[in-house]
Length: 363
Image 1: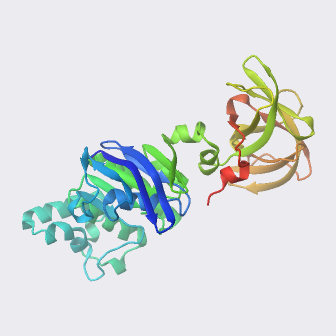
Image 2 (image 1 turned 90 degrees about the horizontal axis):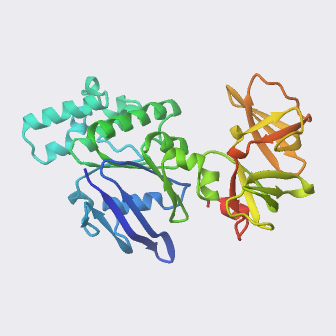
Image 3 (image 1 turned 90 degrees about the vertical axis):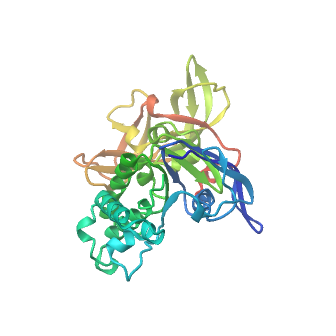
């Protein structure tokens, strides 16, 4: 199984820079998700890694060998596209075995490979059906089988589930991971769907504006994102801007508008530092009294989310925060509440020089 590296990869289209000095190492047998908003450069990156495009600058290495100028057809990889690409005049069997067949593999080998890959994607019983007779999810399974049939050890997945219905996406994402792990492949999976990336990948690479912002395990990116963009893009967060009023031991007291304060962990914080606090909706609670690390506010709205509800509270600092509660708990709009901030759930970032909104922007 290959180890894939991008070294200083840059791609320009005229005066537009789609990728800028991207360095990335994908380990042998690793399932990596590349996540980011539309236009961030993630598809450009995998087209370069796969050999569909050449970089303007930089190199691509596979198992330490420079393959930058090697075309895609000479690389040992399988590619599954966002738009399902099957031959409409061929049945499931001929689509799945097209690679071995066109390379004139012995008939016995084609038969064995076809059975193996269609069993992997649970489509062997539909071997005689044509693409037009299949659902979108089944068509994408056949496309995956075709990518696997060439015995490639590197699998490139370019938004493979985005054209499918929600229920089908959920089912197929877990099938993808199971197949990749069962076969011991190296996989690169591009998506703009954070839940998809977090649920299938061993490691997630977050991109923004042609750059790799951050990479890490799904839990690390969710619980301990290193920067504000990741904190905003991966999951949801509440952000509060303030400044350090005082420090006591390992704690700092951050002051907001109207003089309200919260206690936060203070690694390296000094009095006067401008900071941004991030805390997820599930990390907040509503309490009855004003004791502890709390801020007062008033309920402005409610969003039903099924088993939970999202309560929107306008704090008396004039910030609006979202708090997730069980749906069974009743709260009326206009009610005064106390929002409790558990120090363990608060992340502290330096306030960006360009401003918070600029740091969070998806474009």
